[in-house]
Image: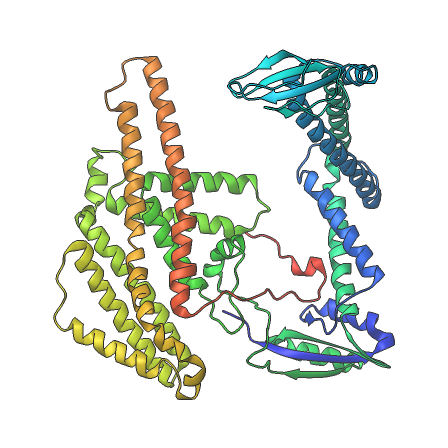
Length: 590
């Protein structure tokens, strides 16, 4: 759920800003909103230092068998930052040299200074690149010599004593150094990069000390940003921010102790308030997705985490569709958890949940690694109704209608006893009309009796109650867009058919590779090895495509179709209180 916030205005003496902010940092419940653009030399220096430290952390491995160097974090950062800058300069020069090498390589090994020396003595030489089928026209008295030829180009050296223009080709600019010298310089720079990398590797054990100073700098930057963003009205200074409602008493108590002036109010409806989400433990796994794609509902929007988790688990199972893959995912998740015990637990909980759902769905549909001729136990576990493509498509449409109905029911609850609630029931009616329309158009099933009247009644509810009378002048375009929105409603219901399409394609790919590998039997050791390679490559490819399908289809149905029917824009920004870094970090729990 989205935590309710209070708007906080805090007043202190300007001379007491630092101490007051340090106390706020200890409390750690106020998200500070800058009242002016923060600007100071200290802040700029700290931001630059933090950027350098973060860049250094990127090149250090989190885990290493190498012992710490014993140097202080500042010295380590200074050494590594200098080495990284040197390495970048070397890489830039290497890139230019390799490009120059490719440019002049067709001309062979020659000394460009000799060509310049000949020009000073009256012998002019021009290097020309021309098309193989296009003649080159030389000035009078000039001759040409073919140097190199490919399917695309001819490379010529043209000689003469009188100035003139060579037509029919492009003159190649003389290099500043010979091909031999370029290659020597490339080898020299590559050796320097290797030396630099070895020097950097000596500090592989210093990740912890550098990470610690990074945390300190993050705290300092946040502190300075808050301080320089405070309002000033000498002799007082003041700040504005937001804190969770349940933490307001803690803030009031601190204000009394510290002698601050404080005002706590409800935010205005049009105010941009940060979003803090707190969910029950069973909903926590969905954080892995929301943080992974970096989306957050706005403060005035709704938290769909629970619905997102439930439906994503179902979509994951249907898109992968193979119980064998589900068991494989469970094993891989267990292995990854053992290898990364400090990683957030909710990531692995999500993988366990979706993998178990995949095993259940694959068992019900009788799909195990795309194999045919399953053992009797697995055959008995199949649900015959799910073995029909037509039934599966019907089921997908049904899921879509249910999913979108939940969105509009949610809106109806939010709107409460207002006319807009009736419009939401109208949208529920059109959604189920589109469900029956999709079944008719795709599956050829007849419409139920009376559905036409349901559709007409639903449209009337939408037309009459979608816009409050007071807002008709500013929101009249909603009525103009209604026909397009109804078409979009139909498309949204039909789009859930992708669950069937991707799942069926996954099964077809698995079955095809199975047949390719073992369809004609295995008659030799070599044949067995080839079959194993085909199975590994085929099922590996299928799993990769399935993972892409989860992102493209499973996540989309929640963040686009479902969210658009809820009216969500994912316009939130995270609640980031002024707090000590260590206090904000929570340890991972299995």
